[in-house]
Structure formats: structure tokens, C-alpha cells
Amino acid sequence: MRNEKIGWGNFFRTVLTIALPIAFQNFLSTTASMVDTIMIGSQGELSVAAVGICSQITSLFFSCYFGFASGGLLFFSQYWGARNEKGISRVFGLALTCMLAVSLLFGGAAVANPELILGIYTDKAGIIAIGAPYIRIVGFAYPLQVIAVIISFLMRSTERVKPPLISSVLALVTNFILNWILIYGRFGMPQMGAAGAAVGTLVSGTVNVLVLFLFLLKDKKTVVLNIKDMFSWRDGFLGEYMGKCCPIIFNELFYGIGQMLINIVIGHQSESAIAAMAAFRVLEGFVFAFFAGLADASSVVVGKEVGSGRLMNGYQYMKKFAVLCPVITFCICLTGLLLNRPLLSLFGLGAEAMFYGRYMILIYLAAGTVRTCNYIMNCCYRAGGEAVFGTLLEIICLFVVSVPATWAAGMIWHLPFLAVFSFLYTDELIRLVFELWYTRSGKWIKPVTGPGKAALPEFKAALAARKADHGIG
Image 1 (tube, rainbow, N blue to C red):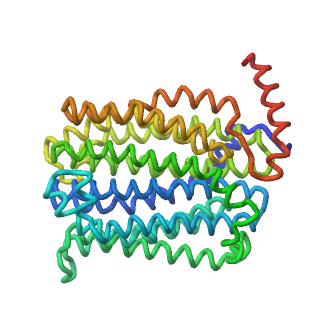
Image 2: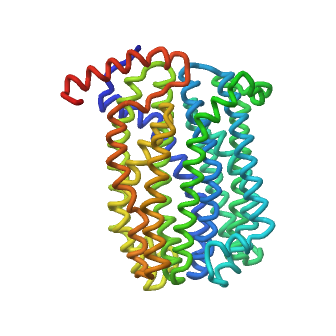
Image 3: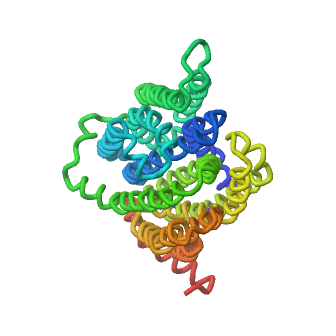
């Protein structure tokens, strides 16, 4: 087993060369979808609230397909460590097929009957009237979104971090320019408001996919996808993929359902509260976008080490990522709290919504830091080959603690909005205790490659020896 002690110097070099570009690319990708909410702020609180509700539908869509993408990332990174190109092609084809099926389901529903979908989330007729044209147009962009995600995951896993970064920059610029023209009616174009923002999202999604395709076709040196292998799922491969992916898929699906229930509670608060929540989601999204990029990078780094047989290296990298990422989150949230007034003023909020937004950021300073710590550990579990523990823990805590508490606070007790909001993160501290223990145990390292499996007995012995030296039972 080829292992080395991973010091902080080596760790930060890895972060700068792999993790930081991925984090920045993820930040730009998510920013493109948030530009709509920011630029629509001049149209008033009602438009902000409508776009915010629509973004929650997109979040549910994300949860339904992201399990397939995360499963793909698990296999991509480990197969890349073992240099198994055929395995990479098969995973890409299977993940893409599953994700496209989900996108067509959601996109078809959004295009066919947007009012029905929006009516699930809110009872405000004004919000539904503004949001329906927006989500109908965005529905056409859903297939483009999943194609871009799986190609980006493939490139990240094989350490090609620049192409997704470039495509995200071009998509963001396209979205911003088209929003500026279509929302406000520049250069003789009609003033389309929220619908104009949706058109910008659709066109920028097209640009993103086209640029990624060009890079994928141009690069013949790293990994070349084989069309025949992409759709060759025999020899037990389909069962192996689904065996690893199903826990992740159910995790993301049930998490999305839990968040939908919470968003229904929020959608039945006052219009000022809904608008404040939409603004907060954008700010939270900026934080989480950068952090989620680091989480994806941790999956690449840990998965590559585990797949190549360097299991102790993967273990050490995971522990360091679990320290670094929450620290970064806390610093970003603290900066947002100090700059809350100029940030929230971007959304055209009234006095009551501004008041809500300020205290929501304060609550998130603590809750968000714990949440990202949990998230990074669960991502590394998946990269190491373990998808069950984190899934069960997250879903149980969400549906036993967070969802019932939030629902009772908002729909039964009718508590003030900030009290309702504070219940959103009640499950995170419970998860943290269990995940810290599981991370230290090393039980989450379960390789899917030959070199990784061969190194497992030696890793377990080395880990037991290390615990004995430190007096850990």
C-alpha cells in the first residue's frame, strides 16, 4: 500500500491545484442560476418571491437527479485512480441516461402545467401568476442542466478542471447580458420581467453545454469516451452501479422531499417573509456553491486515492477537508453578516423583509457551519465507497427532527417567521456527533477497484495500530 503522511503543506497544495478551481467553477455555475433572483429585484418583492419559489422547484429537480451524478462521481474518481477507461465510459453512459430521464419528467411537468406545480408550494395568486411563465421556459433548460453536470463531473474526476471553469464563465456572462436586455427591455426588446430572466437561463445553459462538448471532443489524451462501452451495462455492472447509487439516490430524493415540505411551510408565510427567504437562499447559495465545489473536489481527491490503493492517504485527506471547509464557511458567513445591508439591498426588499434577512444570516452563521461539516463528510463517505450510513443518518434526522419541527412551528403553532426559520437546521447538530465518530472509524472506506480492495486489509491493520497508539478503543 503506497501511502505517505499527508501534512498540511501537501494538503493545501492539493486544494490550490484541484479543489480551488473546482470550487470556483461550481460557484460560477450556481451563480448563473442566482443571477435571475438578483436582477429581478428591481421588479419588486413579488417578483423576487416568485423567482424564489421557482428556484425551489429546480432544487427538487436537482435532488432527484443528483444521486445519479454523485454515484457517477464515486466511480469516475476511483476508476480514474485505477486508469480504467472502459469503466469510466460505462458509468458516463448509464448516469447520463438516468439523469436525462429525470430531466424530461420534470421539464415536461414544468412546461405543461406550471400553475399546478407552483400551487403546491404557495397559496399566493400573485406569485403564481408571475412564476408560471418563468418556470415554463426554465423547464426547457432542465435537460441541458443534467448534461452539463455529468460532463463537468467527468472532467473534474479526471483532473481537467479548466474546461468546466471556462464554460461556466461564458454561461454566466451570457446569462447576465441577456437578463439585462430582456428583463428591462433594452435595445428595443420587450420588457419581459421574470420571463426574460428565464430566457437568459435557457440560452446560457445551451452555451454551457456546447462549450463543454467542444472541450470533451477536443481532448484525446486523458479519457476518450467509447460509445459502445457507454451503453454496455452487462456483466453485473448495472447491479454494481445501482448498488452504490441507490442509497445516494434515495438520500437526495428524500432530502428533496423534506426540503419541499419545508418550502411549503415558507410559502405560506407573509409575502415579505417569502421574499426575504428568496434573497437568503441566493446568499446561502453563494456560500454553498463555493463550498459544494470544495466538496466535489474532496470526492475527487479521496476517491482517486482509494481507487488507486492508497487508502490511508484518502483517510487523511478526508479528515483535513472536514476541518478546512467549515472554517471557510464560517468566515464567508461572518463576512455576509457584516455586509448584510448592502447585500440584501440588491433584492429590492422592504423594511420588514430586510429585518428578516439580517437575522436569518445571523442564524445561518452557526447552523451553516455545522451543516457544511456534515455535508463534506457525507461526500467523502460516498467517494470512499460507503453510501448507506450518511444516507440513513441524514434522512432519519431530517424527517424525525427538522421537518416535523418546522411544520409544527409554521403550520400548527403559527410562530413568528424567524422562529419558524430557526427550526430548519435543528437536525444538523445531531448528525454532527454521529458523523465525527464514523469519520474517525474509517469504516466508510469501501473500494470498488481491484487495487483498492487489495489494499483494504493492510489499511484496516494500520488504522487499528494507529488507534492503539493513541489509546482509542
